[in-house]
Image 1 (cartoon, rainbow, N blue to C red):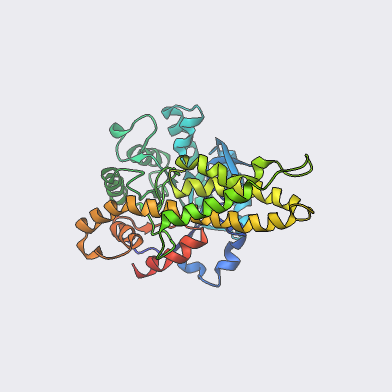
Image 2 (cartoon, one colour):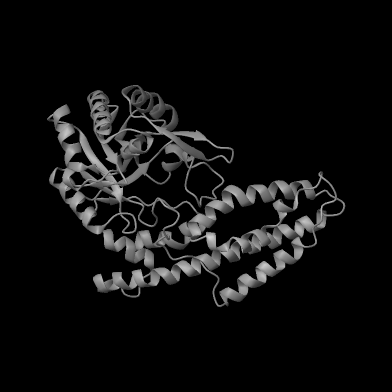
Length: 388
């Protein structure tokens, strides 16, 4: 297949990666920061439209609708591309997961008609040089229409729509999951084969994770070494719960017990946290903000100021240990998956899981989209992206 240059995909929506603990909005980096690492001529710059998102109180975003109308596309392509990205040209403009329209009340016929109108609109900025071409990202794409179900779209139909819009259309790329827990291998190969037969660029996404937090992340989790994980976690819970029993607020001016009882709460709800991704989302969206607000009120308290400082350390230790335990559990679950990859590709034996996952998709897609923003995962696994 083609060897593609470095790809940068950008959006101005709030980051919805559940385990992102970065201080900076990824969008703030922009091309100015990337110039230190990349040359523009070596980069395929991609932008997208579709999801309508609104900010939430915790600085994240919530999908509230879907819109690929010509009016919205015009607003996204020229003004936003220039103001947000600081460029006048985007190489590929994607319609982002158009099957989401089905969740907001549209039927399949209406979805395809909306895509047709979008393709018509996108041909104009292609002609004027504002975008190089356009594409589709989808989490539910199959090759042929007779393979579709209620929630899937057909690449065959999308190609037919593009040809009807313009026989010399610039529909040039698709992005689908490269994750066997998200999509079947047979579907992946069928879609990729059809795409390549029609000259489309193929990008595999969600390589290490799927859209659902119930699906384990396909990476080697950074864990505490040389320790009994069960005993380590029990010790952390015991320390937190012991401190929490000593907190008895005098009146309403002090935080309620519920905001400072995380050892008790997590212990009682441990079975709900089936994956590290789900726990990370709850931790960053609910637990830490609530805890930090409560502790801020106590640091200057004459009775509980010192307790608050100590509880901050104790609770942070508990959160790390609980994360370690979930990571250890996921590593155990993924051992069988890794063994199957070894059987399919013997030369991967002894390699880390990230090596196995990346190598298994090389040669299938033209490019793989790697989206890891959690510092621990990046530093623990990014070397595999280079060495693979």
